[in-house]
Image (spheres, chains in turn blue, yellow):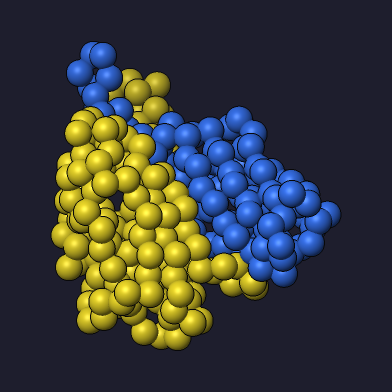
Length: 105
Length: 148
């Protein structure tokens, strides 16, 4: 089971600034380990963010996204107390869902 | 052939078949053609964005010189009305397409993600808005590549 994400959702005016830190190795399949063998690809393919149950952000990623990915989403018309849910799925069909509540800045 | 070895082989064959099935199901939604393309032109084709027009309404924020290619923060803001999706391409990466973000239900046309870059290259943003495609680029110099 993957580590929990860190989600920070802050309101700036009527726009929520949602920043997410995901713990994931994001292996490209090109790196060699100490023994000289290639480390197999292991990366997040899909990221879905919902705000009050509606999908706001639907991302497809490649192995080019950095290790322990950080990404941001901005949602207009958000209010303090709204629930944000983030889900990722990787190429090994591992997944993780975490949620946060938008707070006033 | 001894029976244990035979059953192990059968199990491995079944497992491989099952794995293939699930990875195909995922690939249906994931833009495999784009993510596995090795040239920027092929990536544009997979997105349907071959004729994308240069636009000054796309702002790419990235470091001019990134010391570490393993972590290059890229921010893309589109001022084009009805922006539905933003894709980020690092032109000289082994697989140039890094990410495609789709927006809906009040999400701002704003993308921020940290990517790996193998070498100094143009970072290209593709914006899909109202069925049309727009593009902009920005050069990022890399001191140490991030693909190894």
